[in-house]
Image (spheres, each protein chain N blue to C red):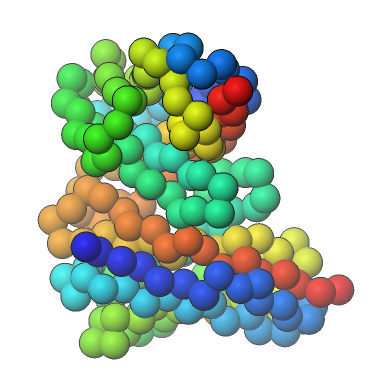
Length: 111
Length: 113
């Protein structure tokens, strides 16, 4: 069974600091990796996609992928209170339409 | 641009009553469509997905069903709701293709009494 594991948190960081969110996955054939942000009571919102090993930067967000270690992470630089949310890691296996989601890490940015 | 609409936003239903949740997508054709449920304290669970009109794949056997009567319309139904059907129901769409992300609607919060 395909699994995606995330630390549930809460992860608390001071405003302006770097928040580091981690995710591991079990399916070695996985090819697509996504990070979603979900505010309390709202639906998930896509913030990053990554498909190949290495780093991908978009504004304050950097996604990092290491397929050999089956590990994907999300760094948020200059964290703001508005970044406080649950971050979901999602992984798509080879040839699959399905996304397998982790249970999410709750991030709290303290002013 | 593409938009996805889901309604209603909230719903309170008695046990044993029927259910119909509707989702429509605008600004695209032949999207893949998905129904998820998110129960309190649990992750997103894929219920159904569809790659075309009338084509439905079920991921979890239960008392729910899905239909896709039109290209951009996806409906989640039940003939008789159970207490365990409570949760946050999310519709999502994606382009076809192997690496496409999914984009979610605003969701329906369903409470069963």
